[in-house]
Image 1 (cartoon, rainbow, N blue to C red):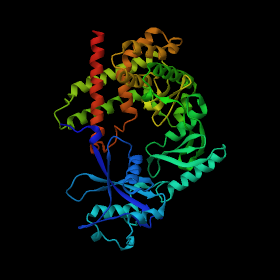
Image 2: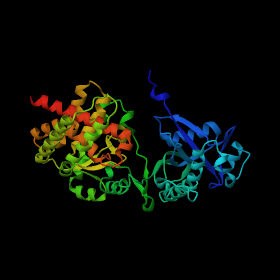
Image 3: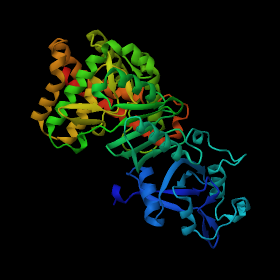
Image 4: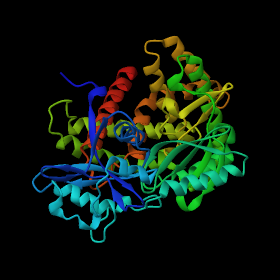
Length: 463
């Protein structure tokens, strides 16, 4: 019997430092020193859950700095996951571990496992310890959270706001951060982005300047961090709404934003939004499906069924034909949100603001509608009348700009092309090390099977 999601956990070994790295929490065992290991539910956010677990176990207020992996010993597959954390009040670590030893006195022989010794060296950035490249950034140093919070407090002062000392850390990395700060008048959000999402910073700044009605209000910017401070958006997200009318308002706001973006498409592309225009998607059809064919050949498990080479060629031809047809339809390229899940749409006062534009793209506007509609179908299964109302909310404005026959044909083709556009635009399908990422390979195979089903649907409809 499979474990439920709630019971599945992941193990993180913790490097919990205090006093700018001078103190580290270590556990003694009969076989040697060990780093503490926290087990958290796999389906919860890692950073706030680690902080909560440290609070539960040791009554310590902590912040996360960055994660990294350490390979298992030779002959053992996989890596161990580590997170560097820091105690907010340095003096409290002595309460948990009163007997200290000098870090300089630690040797490999002191540890029960060699990987913990290597992790301590890497986590401290010891010279010659192969400090991970993806752990180098503006927030990789001890005291990084203090620097962030000081900057936030200074910016808030300009708006007559005051941080009350309460915060919620949702993401943490050497060059990435997402923190909610509570003020005397509501919450604000600090967000900083690094690779592979550096494009989110310039794209968000452009969107906030051009379309303030549909975006969170940006209060301050820190360019050297790729960071910004924004007011919390009031209202409720679609996850919290059981009323289909909220989804209809979201669809109406989406099309309003998209039509307003038509004249800014070139500027948005220059600012870092992804290129999902038909011309670009056509140029990569052949190499994309060549990759899919290789992934299918490499599949080891018998289920789900591997698509045959000829089936993949059929999808390739059908996608090419559909893209050419969409080009001829002359639907204007607009702004798209390729991560338009219910948590990224906030409803208030009859309108909608959209969050998290890391996957902003320019292309056929019906891509975003298709992604949102798939979430709608999961939220309201079997409610065909509600689905028609949802579609109408989006299509009404387009009906004043495009012929009805064009809209009907686009709606037929878009489920196939939207799946391809997402895979070819957002996912690193051309990564030369794709075979080292089985989860991504499996996801791409799953999207190919979906495209295969959509091809079959179009064939049956045509017949």
